[in-house]
Image 1 (cartoon, rainbow, N blue to C red):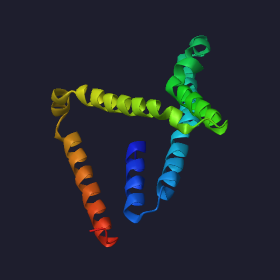
Image 2 (cartoon, helix red, strand yellow; image 1 turned 30 degrees about the vertical axis):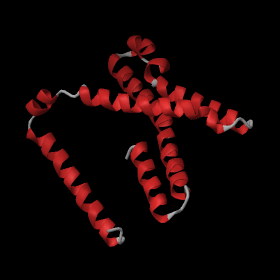
Image 3 (spheres, rainbow, N blue to C red; image 1 turned 45 degrees about the vertical axis):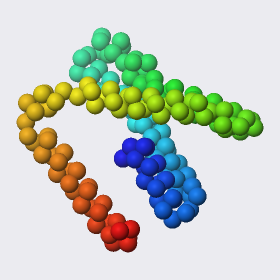
Length: 158
């Protein structure tokens, strides 16, 4: 579901079947295209939400209720700018190895972000919420594991 899982799976597949980066290239392209779909979806949902609120709140409040700057997640814009800069610089003939330190930094920052999310999880609140969310997570985990193992066996991977 997330980009790191997709790239890891595609990279593993390529290395198992000695395909170079054929699967990885296609998987990353598809996943990033889906990721970029977040932009129009986010904008449409923000506008729809603002319109619903304005029809409920009345015309006086609706004039100040919607702000594109508040509704649009700025990280998406930064992602687009970074992608454009990288594409322009590489297409201008600059060696892609120039970006190697940034790749290392980005991996470090992703690991730190995932760690921060995990450390910010409130286990007590999760337990107090009840067993249903935990049971759902466990059932999903077990289901995905079983289906994955069956498919691996059917494909002759083990």
